Image 1 (cartoon, one colour):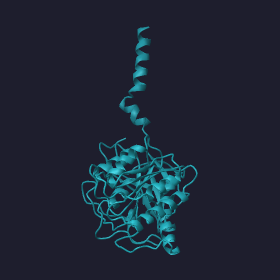
Image 2: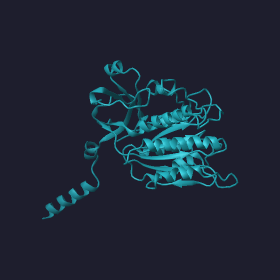
Image 3: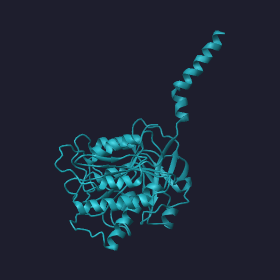
Image 4: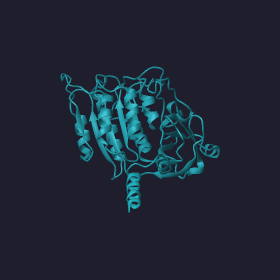
Length: 332
């Protein structure tokens, strides 16, 4: 009787607190990989044999690859700081509307408008509420303010439990001006909650940052950061230093919209509306579809940089192909 009681206690304790060997066997490591072309559209039909992955010192075994184009939760963080005039705010509204129009029935959206009195529309509200909130006049005399990164940190909590494909789209001239949040904290929070960050830059973007504690520059896999057909220039020698690495290290990307130009875009011009809509749809296309890559968890004692690529035969078929994926793989 005593032995049976001890066995029962062991089973209960094991289920509640698995021993390390059982925990390692049950661990399933998975991350998202966007495989996109020059227009931002996703490549379909790839399998596990079409990918390679490496940690800093060893190859990573890929167990399975699943194409995921399911429903998405997307939070817009729209900058209404000093560099955003009334015309630029119309550009923001145009792009938010274009992304929501590209959304599917199952997609849900939320919005935080920064600076002045904070204005929000949470997940589950009517889509029309987002643009009406964004269209409200900014109270420039208000002492209350929330910076772009402050809003990102708050918005991360809105998602609750992580879901495949959760994304934040930052539409901003720059990421400066937050009172509490900083780029390193945001990068860590995005990784912990498995949220990809994308950007539509309303100002110039630089390629270097100290987000990860060192210098980060664009690599071959993020070659879209330079010039590609249908996307255009978006990285400059000057500009916001954290926009590009925060997005790319989370598995997302930033596209330039206005660049360094102070040009007043005429939204009555069909070509301008087409350009803005194209940028917005490109971003939503990257959000809407990606591959879920399941790997055999490597034995890591700490987070390591990873490198994911497609095999050479796929590169030959589609030379203009870029991969978007989280920069680090942590212990499983």
